[in-house]
Each structure stands twice: as C-alpha cells, then as structure tokens.
Length: 292
Image 1 (cartoon, rainbow, N blue to C red):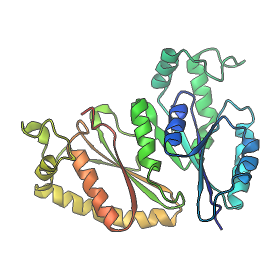
Image 2: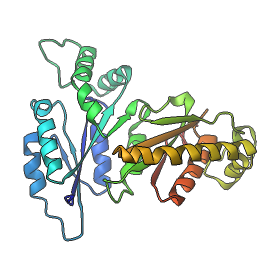
Image 3: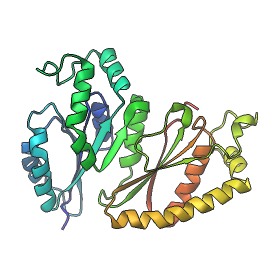
C-alpha cells in the first residue's frame, strides 16, 4: 500500500539550479527542506502525519554538500520505497561552460573546492559529474538547465508538478522549443516541425504566438499538419502503454521549430488535446515562447 507521503528528491550538479527549483516547489505548496542529511530522511518522513484522505508532498535538496550522501542514499531510498513511500528523484544538470559561467557570475565556491585532487572550478565540475554519474542514471527525471534562466526553470517546475494529483501515475510532458535556443536534453522524443507553414512570415500573425486562434488556424488548416498529427498520434498511442508497462514515470515529448513561438507551440497544444481526450495526464511547457 502506498504511503500518503510523497517526496521529490532534488539533486544534481552544483550550479545547476537546485535552489531555484526548491523555491518553485515551495510556491507550489510543497514542504521544502534544503540539505537535509540523508540519514535523517526516514525520521523526517515518519513524523509526517497527513489528515485522512490527504497527501503530504515534500521537496528536499540532497547533494554533494553532505559527505555521506553518495554512500548512504541507495540503501535508505530502497528501504523507504519498501515501506510504501513514493520517492521521486529529480536530477538537474547543465553543460560545463554554463556551470563555469554561473560560478563566475555568482562568485560562489564549488563544494569540491578545496580538495587534494581539485585546483580549478572546471576540475571540480568534471569530478562531480563523474561522481554523480550513477545517481543520474537512477534518477526518475533529468532536466538539463543549460537553456533555462531562473524564470524559465521555475516555470518548468510549475508545469511539471503544479497540477499533479498523483506522483505514482505516468506523466506526459509536452515541451515546445526553438532550435536556435538549443534542443532540450530531457526529451525522450524530439519532433522537428520546421517543415510546417510558418505564421512568422504572415504580417498579421508574426507578433502572435502559437496559442492564438489566428496562428493556430493558419498552421492547422494545412493538410501536412493534419497528416503529421495523425501519424505522431498513432506512434504515441503505441509507445505510451509500453512505457507504462516498463514502469516509466515520465515521458517527455519535445516539439521544435525555429524560434519556439509559432509552429511548435500550436502542435504541442494539439497533442495535449489529443492525449488528454485519451485520458492521459498531460502537462505543457512552452520553453521559448517569450524568446522566439
């Protein structure tokens, strides 16, 4: 029987946005704790007393700042799951150059400095990436924050967790993006829709985005768009039950156009309607709609 206490463990590389993610969870009403020693996690969860029929949701940052985290987490997490607790691990990462720039801009010290084997921030980033490689593989969800600013990351967390009723149910994450801003690293599937008619080149539609009725109608009335949606829907109806059978908790489908403002947004919204009608839990995040 599942315990009514559900927990998101936020972890990952230093400088990847864990503090920002934690604040986003706090805005969503989660009970939030930063840098809780992993050995205290069982005690923390056992003192939570949800009201009958209700669920307690907590978000906790755990990472390399605690010396024993990597040695202890696997056993502790496994035991808690056996007790029926829902633990979901969210791993944040970024590219080396982005992490280096963030440490330079914020003037923060990397937690692995000083160390006998580390002399520079880049050395520390490389070492931490190696040490966390297994943890990343075991994570339920990985988000590459290289292309996110603070507001975009908080928006992504809000999209992924804000409307969730049950963390034990497969969540389909539909993500629109612009190729010129980078392909999202967390995507399980990526669709390129740059072949569809582009409202950007229509003067009356250029300043609108793909959620507007006028831009949507322009994209959707094209037969190529309808054929694409039909074929993609068939593929997803085939794949989603297979992912559910394997116990996958997230399925991220990214759709990209040039700027992430028109075609990818419209297609993402249509896929949301199609999948929602089939009874799937779907969240949508338009990553670059304000940039494209």
